Length: 266
Image 1 (cartoon, one colour):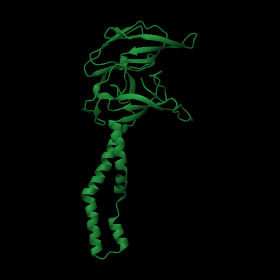
Image 2 (image 1 turned 180 degrees about the horizontal axis):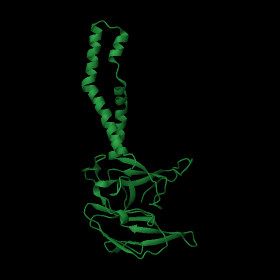
Image 3 (image 1 turned 135 degrees about the vertical axis):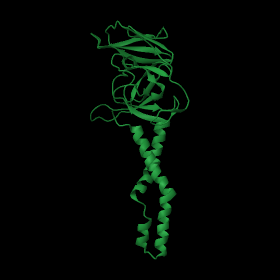
Image 4 (image 1 turned 30 degrees about the vertical axis):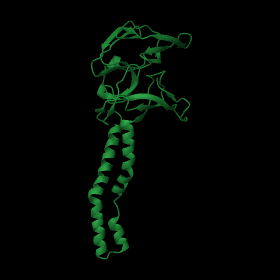
């Protein structure tokens, strides 16, 4: 499991803020009292300077707390950046894409705990969403294909929602001879987006009923995605936010980041 950065940020902000507040309420007055006593007793300039000098811990806390607080507020309630580590969302998102996640589209939540404190909106089918899956404490990004109450069927690698087939338009195949994957445009609710499938037949018919307060997620790279088909539904409390844009792309190795691939996410 990786470092829980939101928890680290919350702790750092809380600790530096507490030190700053404790200094304002108590320690600063103690230093002023010491300064007056030293002056009354005829202490020299050097002695006075030593008496009123702020400890380094307080100095650093006063410097870092405002910055940490601003970052915490931005990441918790407005926008948070993420990097795409795998190809499960190809062709919509590529490995190395840096994305921006809207944290208030689905309501304002307390950092770390995820408790919703203000209801703004709900995920809908077709949204690309960042969340924490039920089986591990890591960020995942997939597409919402089932909201509470939906009946999901995956038959012949085609998605059915409430017994309605989600239309597919064939786009291309790669390579042209003996293709390894097929590219389609899928129409999911009001969203048109690309998906990848391999050309091999899957005879299974899989069905799920999305329970209240949960969501069904799938990757656009349908045969190369670990998603709700394998580990189940995503509880509402595990939602992080809605992915809205790619703002940077970085290929592996010693290559410069690219901004020409910036785009809105559909």
